[in-house]
Length: 154
Image 1 (cartoon, rainbow, N blue to C red):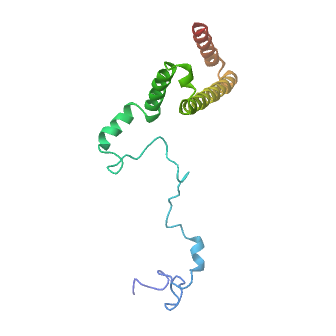
Image 2 (tube, rainbow, N blue to C red):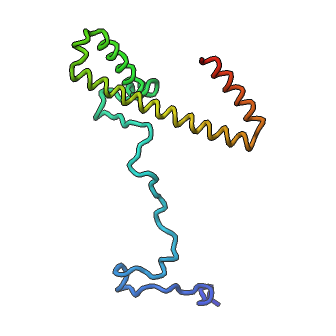
């Protein structure tokens, strides 16, 4: 008896050879997808800048600098220094358009920072409310810590 009996190896339905490639197999709707990669938030980059030989003479050094001091922190320090230098100018010179445009950007950035801080505090308030309901003892401990920190800050 042969091990290749028709019962042990049932034939799968297939398109005739002359039709293969011209029409999809209707049974493929039951097959697993061949590609299971799906981008999440395509086009977004989180906290990284691509530094290569094309945009930097020494990418390794630049990456090390950014790891220690972000571009935002570096720009913030430069903006603080420029603002201090502008403040030393006579009042009439401070009114020049470039300095006014600089001051406007600085105000917008300060507003964004203030709004971000307010959103973080709103999340803390919501988290404390949840904690008060779910773990009252932990809430009491944290509330006391916050009261102490706020008293020292005033």
